[in-house]
Length: 453
Image (tube, rainbow, N blue to C red; front, side, top):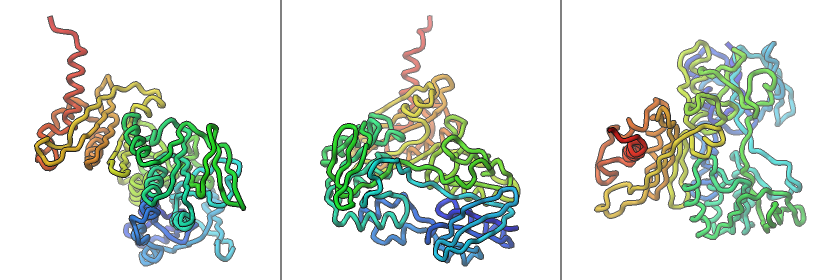
């Protein structure tokens, strides 16, 4: 059996590692554009900020390790065409320029995503950089040495993490986003306001509701960023405006969402039965809505890559779906979310109810007891939990992993009220704040019900 794998970051590396063990007799070939595999892009800001000094720690595998498993590694090879009828691949060696033709019995697409590059006037100026892979991270570090004023465009996870890194490095930082607030895809306004206030207190300039119109430069290097509301002087621009799936090779050949994300079944199989897909090039089954969503996260990628390997020969293990669970540490604040927020529910046209509580993470008699804000989103009819968000200076983010399980298993907010959690004063309170969210929901419901006569 000949297996071809295109791309080898999270999903690809997971698929290859597992296939080498599951199918030792198979002929496995990996095609990868870069000269490395398995770069943890979620650690990019930590590397740029100097928290991670040894970049090798951001790789959990290498071409040599995969080769030692008996895999043929075609590094720095760009696949240019796939014939899904004849099951052939055409690629170019980016070092020598040599064309390669290959065949496959099974194909695994793990081509990932690529940063969105908007068609803005002046975007080709020097010192306007993307933030995705290892080489881009090194370029950011090198260019930042001579930059004092840094502009970050895009206030998602990577954007705000890079803002934090540069602020800690003593840079003058401006954050621009077309949305009205930062992190709007992950957290509701009451949570993001806390982060924004912290940013402002640290001297970070926030330019929300602003769209970049053009860049201007001096001697070929960017010097100003002009938006619909103002102009900002800058020495360096980092673009973090989102990601798009790398799926051009299969356009018109397998089913996709409108944004180009490949649709897969619960066994990671595309509409072509001999092609599997995993990672950031895919749409994933999204449990809160029962549909598919594009959620480019490393956690989704490694799970999907592993499942693609296990299900390659015959359906063996179903994907249980995702809640899009994620977490973030910015300055002194720890935050995490899972499933639907009030904001995302509105965008999807889904009617929800929200329960918000404020508590302390442990009893007041302890030396410290940090404030915790928790918001739970539920279906008002079935009372099933659809999402949750938490923020605190204490690290209580693991509670969101618990809430992810609640969503996946269909738990109701009323069941959450009485779920068994341990109590120990160092960690929590006799009534866990998750329990209290359930109790508050019951209290609100009892006030709404008519009195018994």
